[in-house]
Length: 52
Image (tube, rainbow, N blue to C red; front, side, top):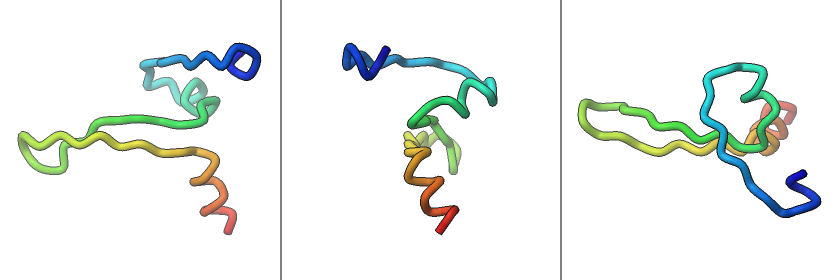
């Protein structure tokens, strides 16, 4: 559907199978108390880095 309509979806989940089907993951981390940071991971690019 996203390729045919150029539509984007936002899915909020911790379900591993659902996350595995995504192109990009976003998350929020708090490395130090009171300081939140947005994290974005392009899964295709990460896969290329791992495969070398």
